[in-house]
Length: 81
Image (cartoon, rainbow, N blue to C red; front, side, top):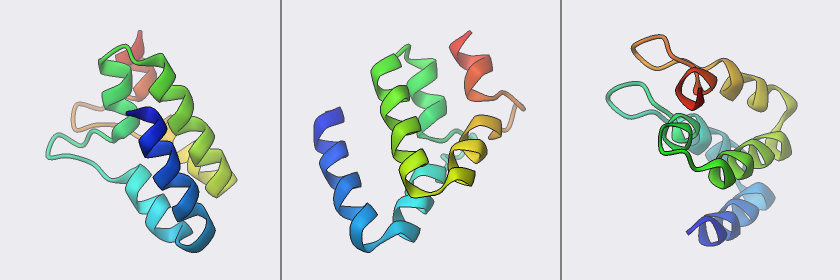
């Protein structure tokens, strides 16, 4: 699954960086982004990939993912711990 998403991300980086940024920061109804879900499910590989994709879009995006909080004010790192 990560490889398929990786292929899509690589294509979006080339022609649609804003779409990619929005996709990585999108949240569900609980305020959880993809990085939150990866951490909650102990999917370290997916978390690493999301982080690398974010760094490839813009330096501030990886920071945004690092400090993003869900509606319970939990960051990805809270959930991973």
